[in-house]
Amino acid sequence: MSVLRAYQVEAVGKAREALSRLDRVMLSLPTGAGKTIVAVEVARRFASVLWLAHRKELIRQARKALDEAGLQRVAVKSVFLGVPEGRYDLLVLDEAHHAACKTLRAILDRHRESKVLGITATPIRADRKVLLFQECLEVADREALADAGWLVHAVVHSVRVTRNLEVTAWMEAHRDLVVPGVVFVSSHAEARRYADRLAGFRVAVVRPDSDRARLLADLAEGRLDLLVSCLILTEGVDLPPLRGVVIARNAGDSSAVLQMVGRAMRPSAGKDVCHLVEPVAVGVERAPIAAAIHPARHLIHRWANGAWTSIEAAPTLPQAAQERTSAPWRTTSHDPRHDRPDRS
Figure 1 (tube, rainbow, N blue to C red):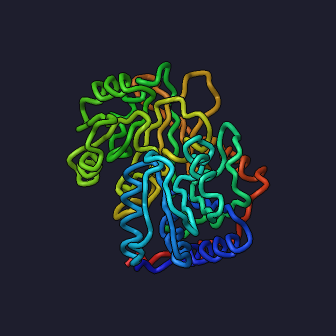
Figure 2: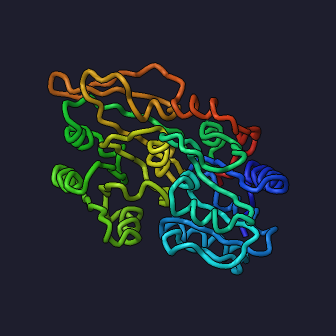
Figure 3: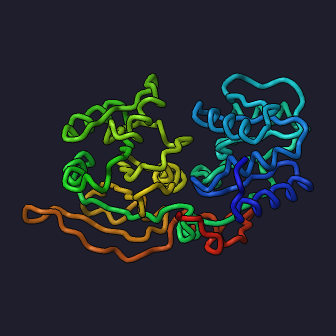
């Protein structure tokens, strides 16, 4: 059984208290902060529990955490298997920002008598759809967790280009910042084009029918340098060695950005920071990653006179923080800077 960190203990307590007086509660913690472990401890107090997730990686992670905690009695199912039968005291919804979709709404409608705990790193949706939770608990933020050493700080690299594919030239010149890494693109055809342009790297394209577990293992163990992905690996991927994330697609809202960059924010041996790379068209001022988070540094890179040049950008209030500040359910208290991990 895992020993909970102080902020996780507080999260468990707050979730239990909220569920004692409300039916549907959302718990928000940054990617890598241990949402699954917290939800497992909350579930321990309930006699019958159904854990729902929409990706096989999330299902495997939940099952492993529950087994390690001795909670084999908890049912773990895919949301795509239809509306589950039976009665449960508690439903746990993994990646609960998807609760607005018809599939999950049907499940919640079928189990109206059950308490519901939703867990997510991104409680704000771009479409502003109502998620049907009565309260959202936020315990500890990304910057505080990085200060405490539970996550790593981020350096954002905005690379000025005329078209996104040109970011591959910058990657070739800065391979130590992006390996091992994941490149997120907008289509499967574009993924193939990126793989072709990245011939200097050991690279694989992640397709819907790929053996994702094998590809992720190859990346983590050094047999691959990069994975190129379209709409895959944005959630449910736990890969601490990941050093770089390149978002070479229209990232959309800050929630989508946070999900993608969160893949690289877990600490690992020899990794002090992660590097988040975005191609930004010449003449465009907004840098999506820098707008979504509060990076330790934000560098702007340009190709000039046969070489890459860099300047430091001024810090700005992250878009995600602005969105959360306006949310009526915001509840935050614990500061994990006082709870540093053992580096021995």
